[in-house]
Structure formats: structure tokens, C-alpha cells
Length: 339
Image (cartoon, rainbow, N blue to C red; front, side, top):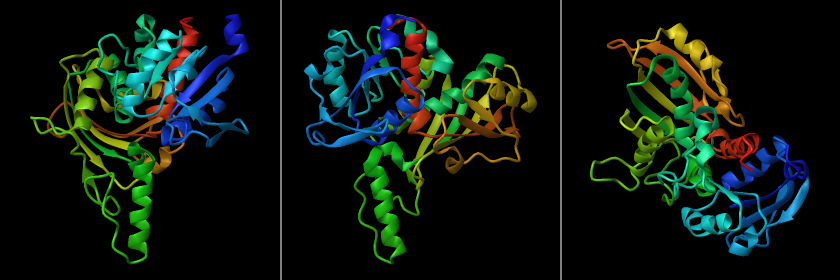
């Protein structure tokens, strides 16, 4: 271990007051990440407020270039515009960026990493590492053990995504609408989602392309192909927002190259780090995974009309889907001697 890692690292968190940023602070503390100095940063709107870390209240500073002087790791859990502007400033000052926004994910020079799946991609990083979309992480975690065991040909999936995937505004919109309906009042009109989310499900229709697929669906397709290094993998997707605070789910039909018996698939999943595979009688749910770092996979069964396998997968989108994966990337960088 280097003298720097023995003393700890200078760590900054951009977006420290947001939904992912606050969980990231918790995860850094829970995992005893070696921190010599922590700098919580945010936009000017949040500057001057405070965040809790390891029993202390830390004042939030404005995220500006000079705030990154002497930093080792900078976690971006904020808007893509901040990352696009400030990530190069971090690298110019010798720091390593781990970015949760979509800004750098499909850049050919930036590794897109889920440590359990493709940690070796970190070896060639140039200072910026992208953390995948919160839906993609649980998705590729489920696919990778099956791919290693029997190859991978195609996936058909429907995701059911929690409102916290849209940050604090998503959580607040669900809360306010649920409260209004409980009190017998009309729910306020939606601001974050395309339709009321309380007592409802809303297909994700953001940034529709010419092919009719949403931006969220495009992310899942493109990121999965990049992480698995399978540029032609057939991935067919529908993404849906559901009135659940935390925990993304996916119903997945997976076609492997070699037909995979259910028992062998369950064993492959159970042996993979970070996955808890359950027998068909035990049903993983978003409520069961909230607050956990594992990806839960269950309902593994043969398709009735093909050699494919159906699976049901859930993961906490704020933890493994965001904060925990980001911290694991930093831990892996240290383990590999890249910092």
C-alpha cells in the first residue's frame, strides 16, 4: 500500500446534497473508504448548506475548478452539464473522475465500468471513468454470469423503474401526489414525469428517437453492449416508471448461445459476486432490495417456446445502481495500483 493510501485520499463529491450524493456519502463511510479530506460540493443554489458525514456536519462549497486542487478522487453525482464542464478540470489537476451522469458513458476513450463485470477496463483510463445508468448495472450484473457460462445471443426486457431514478424531484412528486389522493384531493399536475405517477405506471418516453425508442431505452442498449464488449448483442427493451420509491426491477428473457438448464443458471448466478439468486418460491422485490448492495435475481424458468430463460431481477438504484458502484470503482483503482 502506498504512503498516500495509508494517509487517505482527498475526495470530493459533486452533487453532495442530491439523492445519489447523499447515499454516496453514506457508502463511503460504511465501506471505510480511506479519506484524508472530504469536500462536499454542489451548485451555487446549495452552497452554504451542510451534509452529514461520519457524525460530522460539513459545509457544502460551490463546485468550481479551484475546488478540485489536490484532489485524488472526484465523484460526480450531479447534472451532466456540470460533469462536462468540470471533469476535465479535475483531470488537469491530477485527480480521477468517477462520473454518474450520462455525459461520458459512450465516449470511446472513457471506460464504462461495473467492477464485478469489466474491472480490467480501468487499466487504460485517462482520468475519467463513467458509471453506468442505474438500470444498466443490475441488468449487466444478471447477464454476465450467464454469458460466462453459456454465451449470450439476445435479451428481451421490460424494466420497472423507481421514481428515485429521477432524483429528489421524482421522490417528491410521488409523495405529494400520493398524499393528495389519500386526502381525497386531485393530484397536482406532473412536473417530473410525463403523467401522474401515484397509482399509475408511466412508460418512459423521454427524448424519443426516430425509431420510437426513448433515451432511457437507448442507454440500456448501448451501455450493455459496451460493458459486455458485445457490440452486436440483440437487446429489445421497454422502460417503465412505477410508483416505487427505491428499487429498479426488470423482467428478462435471456437467450444464451448454449441452452442453459435452470439449475445451472441459478448456480452461475449464485456464484457471481454481488448477486443473490433465489429459488422460484422466493420472490425478490424492490422493497426487499432497498438499502442493499446486492442484485437479487429470482423466478428463473425456461421459456415455453424457446431455449431462453426468464428471470426477474431487482436492485437498489441509489446504491448498487449508483453510489456503491462508483465507490467500488475507486476501490478497484486503488487495488490495481492505478492511484
